[in-house]
Length: 211
Image (cartoon, rainbow, N blue to C red; front, side, top):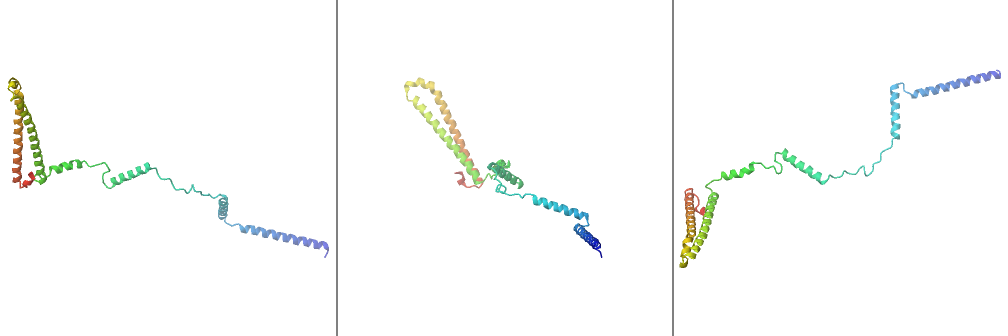
């Protein structure tokens, strides 16, 4: 075989080998891609997202980020506590502070009106009031009697003042009338005290309540 024939055969063999290598490379590239286009698109989107996350910087937290919230001001706390107290009072049915029931004002009066008139407390109060009236009347009578006595001693013993006595007799008469009126008042008060003692005995009360 001639040399030229050998060269042709070598060129043909080299061309066949090159074609085989090219076909093998194309087969490997196509094997890496999936036959499903949807899966390929999802894979590419996931790869792009991972690249973005890898490039995004991580946030660094400082002391200011984890610092606790500042407490409320005293006036805000007081207002909140007051609102909670009022709300609790309204929820459980109890009236708020300062909202007293009007019945409390009349409750004591009704209790006094319904008090037993024959109780020891009632009788002792009635007798105490009556004794106070009598003591006051006796004191006033004593003062009037001293004034009348003073006027009588001033005008009657002096004979040289007879004329003046006649002119000033009206003052003595007025004081005498006041003394008589006060004596009458005192007698009525004492009589009322006696009647009260009689009523106490009839009611079956203790005579010691009249003291």
